[in-house]
Image (cartoon, rainbow, N blue to C red; front, side, top):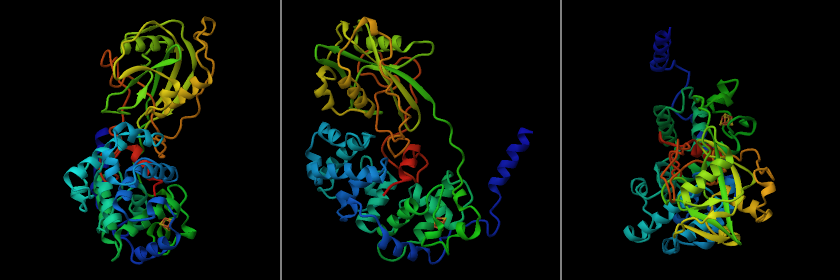
Length: 458
Ligand code: SF4
């Protein structure tokens, strides 16, 4: 029976579509109509104020994993502090991360900074114009390279994010799984062939704007859509919202972690994560994954000792911080205590006042722990040890804010990620996003975070 099913599935995949069942050509009349609509209805977003390549580049990197409505203030703050490429290239990494704080997915900021230095060093301070050269820069994948080339330089290329993919699938009534690279390539080619003479960048933005504001994922507004008369999904299907077709995603695993806010007088022990990997270079409190059969407090004590060499006296349970990453969800049990045996300190691990901690580049969940400590300072009492004082647990935020599975804005290492000291790792590691920054909606390696993020970009 299993063999029969496999053979049947294979047959369905290789049998060509019947005539009229879908196609890869954008219907005539659609490009001009969507462009005219965009020129009248586009939103006045800050990165649209000019086509200055540096601004377009910063915006594209920010929008890789942050929703449009959330990106604007971060974009303006970043441009106010780093108004041009040479200023960004001269800055220290910690300064860039601090300005980026809150936007999440900090690898984007590090790569943006690294790319600025490459551009100054190798391209005389000017952003390259070709897709191929742009794609060699840190943090610039095929999608971002196409977006910069089209929007800043008018190149006739089409960046395909989730909005553009959805719109193209509906315009052409594409019924195959858009998760398949061949199908995506077919839609990408169809859109590229449909670019009207003139500004390819405006067309790209028009398609994505239509996807975000009119041709929405679950409730397309066909009644007010400027291309409703030509769109094949609208004219041929009873439920255009059923396109695009995707295979169902697998469920995200859940990770439980424990964190110790160790205090000595008015100072707290913090440590810096390794520069590479998830939330690289950000500061956090010691902690890690709760092993099976282990209590949260026992885990907190174990992680503290393994990472820092310290032991703690009575621990007070402050609450639980919940967070969602693109590939897993996490709950962090937060404890506060004083050291019995002092930790090892170094350039990457030190004592700091809460004010100093708040001034460091922090993952979002660590920001919330700092807020917790600010509200409940230093009350380590035996009678309270182990009793939850407050549950800060809220429903999981959307992953990296994208907007995204990543409403995630970052969080302390929920599981044993790379150590800043002590053992390299204990037990199974928490699942980690395949990569943080490059949104490459047209590539097979694109993360769910990026996919979700681009649902609402521009
Ligand atoms: S007519 Fe409907 S399905 Fe087609 S592009 Fe417009 S909103 Fe989307």
